[in-house]
Length: 191
Image 1: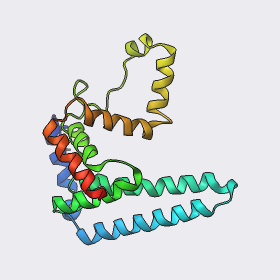
Image 2: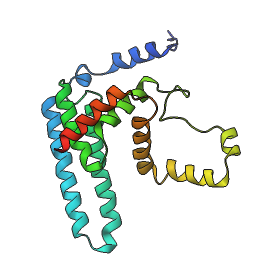
Image 3: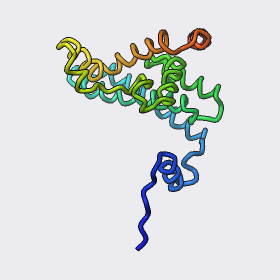
Image 4: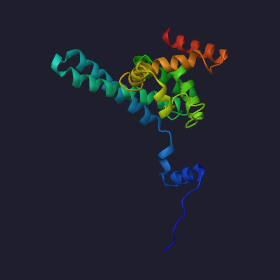
């Protein structure tokens, strides 16, 4: 019986994964993308209707439904940022911006920080999104900082994510030229 040796690096592993995908797995299907976007928007509208008309005792279920529907908008925007919604960069930007607007999430700024994150994924020195605390760091934190970090990485993750992307956009690695370009894009979609 022949035994296969395990792939020894990331490229070999990815090549093995892609070899097993069906041929149409990586094709961009614009009709299906728009159909999915339409379904997501219909679900969001229904969710807001349910939220508005629910009696108080059904609100927790309505919140879960609305939150799940809104997550669909983020997923479509995420696909646009990865250029997997369509082959057109402009169309991806337009759809991504429209889908992120109700979430109060600045699409272009998020796209910039998200691309930076993917460029430096798993690099604990450069990746600004995935920096788990070490035991030593946690042991040096005051009780207040432990409390703040628990909520910022837990129950208030969405809110802290907005602040995080705003911070990353306005301060560390975004050049003035990119900031000006992105601000013009964000403002032009609002007009």
